[in-house]
Image (cartoon, rainbow, N blue to C red):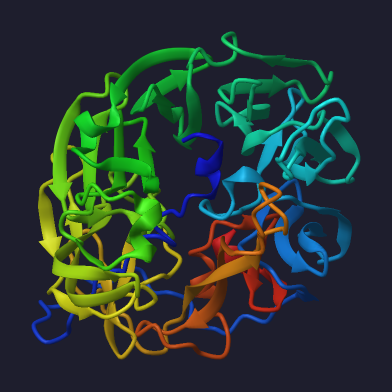
Length: 499
């Protein structure tokens, strides 16, 4: 993970992972009917014409959303109540582009006010001779007023700003003069900045990959490290957790459960010994059973509890964990498993790929239920229709043959065709030109998050959202649900029964 690693393709681009499919051919009986969802059509209280690249973050009556603008990515702050634009600022995606999805980040100050934190383009210091173009400054703006709270000096910021320890103020990671990582902490109320071992004791090159979880590369070895309030609790070689060839450069997804003292994560694995940067320049087949793995390990010690070969969490990234055993509920978390098949390079085509959805016990990794394996033909065909949920259901199957599935049991959940849901489409943006180095053209297409559309249980688009569907999204505030769709951001007044 040297400086150039920021441009390395992730699982979304290097190893485009299809999501598993289910079939209705041998469905078990429907599970007990869940509480009836409100099927009344919801009308938007307001709509704003924008070109969003993902869902908003909402706090303090404000929705912060990233959009595509004429000069690049922009941050727009909208009133949750009215949709009125409160302020806007340009955003630079930084060295995390194009591999890591670009999404809004919000933190809180010590007094509890919300702040938007991101990067903006900056000029390199005059006394530094460098080939690097993407110099940026970390910035913070009051979420409600747009007042600038902090502007850092131009740096080679390697990781976009994030809330320190997932709570307050702003942290970011930058390269020092030896191209090693230094984590910085900024008190947004005083402007005081600290950095180095007092903030994070890790050495080498590192980046956050989960809650208090970092990927670290030093002397050619990649490790995972649990860091809490600046203290390194443990470090362990990534290959000792995930096996030979494992690398976060090939994509990662980690979830955390404080209740279970558990991390569950999946990373890409390179079983070929070929430099991944050369995959698209030669003819080879990558066995998908050998290129992914999911592992459960203790958050307090790093001790591996279980492994699941040929599996990934990428498919369930749009599902919440609140209602699962990883959160406060009883439903099962979901992973996806390849049964067989290959991805062919340089074409990036799939050959003979079958996959399935698996509901698993998070402490043992054991499969409790599985969908029937089905063929997947390309990365943008979804066996799990990417619908909003808190983890208690998924839409499983192909777009022409799917059903609503109860994640407690894996059985059809008994929804009617007039029930509405919220499905997602992947969103992209264009990376800034001339970078990150002068001899690189830039301008690649990079990943945002998702835009939403109203859908039925089969995954097919329908005309309008229902009030029942709006209960599935987490972007709610002050009795309103705010959602990014293609070409607009909309706010919906929730019914009293859902507030």
